Image (tube, rainbow, N blue to C red; front, top):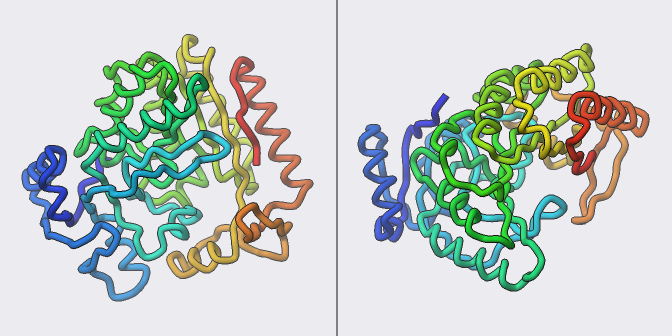
Length: 340
């Protein structure tokens, strides 16, 4: 399920970088139509007669640009900073927070000045020395689908392999991982997979690999010696949810090599939504069956001044108890980073 863009836009300055020229030539070989754009933040010319069509076409659009800001955003609680390698994702998950945060710019963006970005990471590492600094490579993206065009993940992994005080982590729903299996990582990159129950993936995670395909990719990554991590999110309570999440843990247990079990992390995120996200979901997926009934939820104000609709406390407790029990049964040495 390799992502091949339907169209591409380049900032003219991006073609002055070796990586920009490399991506340009690869897209020509793939017969992808290419146009120029003044800014990767203001792209026009993506077709669509309505919001749904425009969103779908944007998810098939690649924009190649130069990242100009030298500042990295923070990335609590899982890392100290975001490592901005790219933006967005070709998947069309109905619940995805990026549909809200990216707004009218859901198209995929990649940046060609990766050396400058990594130089900035070096500065952050030096500022926090002698403490270890952790960078998240997938805070606003899934970096795997465009890796075959850019190679920026490989470059970042090799960069952190040489930094005793730097650590890298990223997460993906996609399975095109073969180009990263032989990369020297020195155990300093945690390769994480976003997993879910098969029903959730089938109903809500459109244009993404199945749960079984993701588990198979995780086995490849484990065999390559990477520290592994799994995000199970969003955890939904539906008819038969226990059996399906049990199948997920059992599949991991049956297939992961013993050598991988000494250093696995789990992150659990229960389903939640904001009023703005609900509006965006209903605009883009008017036939959605996601549980978005505000009356059935508990409202909680967040740290950024807006609130979220969470499952009721008793449901949260049930989900948390079940997920922790599954993790303890199958992976007693694993670390659960958090449940929210």
